[in-house]
Image 1 (cartoon, rainbow, N blue to C red):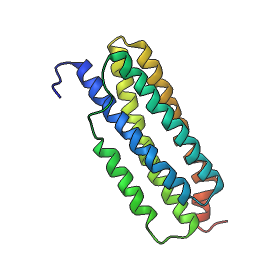
Image 2 (image 1 turned 90 degrees about the vertical axis):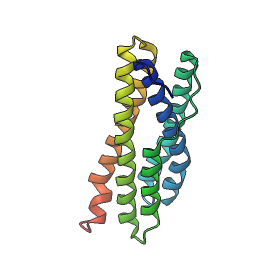
Image 3 (image 1 turned 45 degrees about the vertical axis):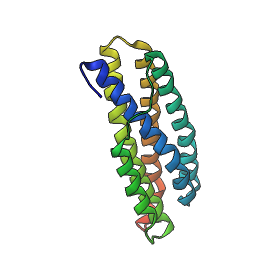
Length: 165
């Protein structure tokens, strides 16, 4: 793709995020199935629904831009998901596996937070306030998921994995 200006970069980065979200839509059910902690399983299931909503919001932005969301593969998300798959194949105690799932999920969340923060800034600079608003909504949900995972890790899961219960 030829990138001549910030608008082109904005579209390119949105395509990357759209592909990332769609990869995540496929990965989250496997993570929820592998989780043994009921709260963690519920968090993954809730985030799956949010992730579907994120893809829909991105489709709205692409429709407004008159562009297709397809055409780019997010190699970073592919790598993060592959690391998560490797972690799920380990022979680990349930609480240790749950702690590992949180670690993998938070890597994904931090990647998404970085990406959405960037494109939201581009949208603002380009004067695309509608897109900036939708991207901020996604960013807020990604941040809330990250905080929820941290709370689960610090209050129970990592504590149990450490054997201090």
